[in-house]
Length: 393
Image (cartoon, rainbow, N blue to C red; front, side, top):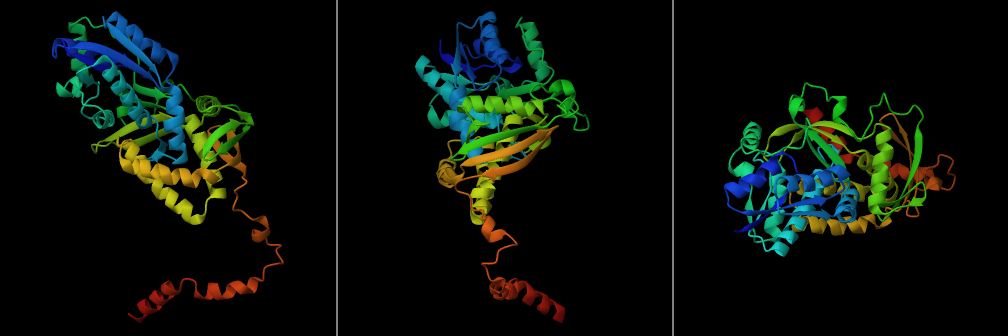
């Protein structure tokens, strides 16, 4: 019997996939859950579910520190955001796929399986990564059999497959963010119920007293909070906790999926919003105007590459080289004020600061202001010529 490694979350789709792979594909199923910083119960539950439904081999793969250091930190340096929210799910998918490929090689598996439908983004993200690094066949039972959610539930009931998730929404979590979709949220006119949120409090429940926090960066990545040095995983976790307490990081958008569908998505990204706000403030101090303009172009291209599941695209690696060089000077401290869902930058400092108080002050007596008159006279010359030509018509 051929082996298949199934990326397993223990939810409806992947739980049903176990039986489908056994019954309809006649395969020996090995399940694997990759830890990219989701809550402990989301790591424990897949192992329990796999055991209860009779899976002979289940693996839990710890990749949370690698995710923080090699993926999230790259995202921070690139200010990776898609249509207004920090990338989280799409950053984790290539790493999960890589770990599944490694396991498949270890187990000498014939195929790799996932529980994606034919409407979502993750099928692209998983499969492009798998095909870039493996010769294994790819099986997507839910998509291949064109199953609806109701048909999956009926199949589970018919085959006595126990389902252990009582969640109302479809949720994906990792260290960098939490996505919430489905059920009543499919109607864009329905306000997101408070019960959908777990990482953030409402602004009504946030503390009345503001909090001042200092974030220190070295070469574009955070290294300390309030002068306490921390590793990547710890500093992101702590940023999530602190920003979430102040109701920061709730995002409700209509998102354009890879295949062109618009979907209503809710995100909780408290730590990401906090860190990226500070990172951008420090970039303003240390990068030139031309670098900042080009950085915006890089951010859009980089984010679309990652969102579209093209982590192994060489352009992403090329952009990382450019970003790393630009970020060498993004070192310093930023102080921010957190209060009831808002973040305000209070101050920033850097040994690479391009700001000169002596040059910009109105009290400067060293510079002869008259020297600028020639530049001002010819500034906008083409626009002035255009206006004169137009007036002749």
